Amino acid sequence: MAVENPDHECAARARVEQGRTRLRISVALATSEGARLHLTALLVIWALGAAFAVASLIVRFRPLGPPIVHVAWLAAGLPVLWAYTRFAVGREIISLGRGALTITHRPIPLGFARRYRLANAHRFRVDTAGLRIANVRHRRNPLRWRGEQGMILFDYNLRPVRFGVGLSTAEARRLLQAIRDSGQVSPEQVEL
Image (cartoon, one colour):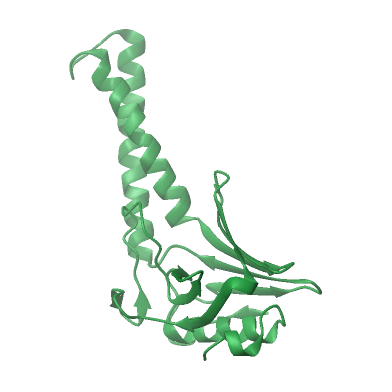
């Protein structure tokens, strides 16, 4: 079952797959075409500079200064590549099964998965308080490295946890409905 947003041109931003023992939700992290184009432009600029830096190091032609400048340019590309793979082509994967909720990011998870026991999770809800909402959709700054953002919020051991970056309020409500209907959480845990 794919959850689609009728208010926006992006179709099927969130995909819901219901199995016998688990629920898997996949949400595209690119919140707009503008963000995707911006990150693509950064990647192209860095790649051109990287080609120049490698060529300069090989032929020992150094119009920009010592070799450390060229090596620094190459190293600066690592965050650009990470941001591109995460926010331009990445997806947030939310899995519910075996009494746990797991949130990972693809295509490069780097081994980081947030795992929460569903027994300790309470009050799944849509929450827009404190978030920057533009054009009916929650926007995430692709160059912000820290902090959890998202439209869906739940309490876990007295700490708020967010997921569902880039969803509209209607999409987030549909996903909460799918979570409640999956049977992985009790209906009392979900506020619609």
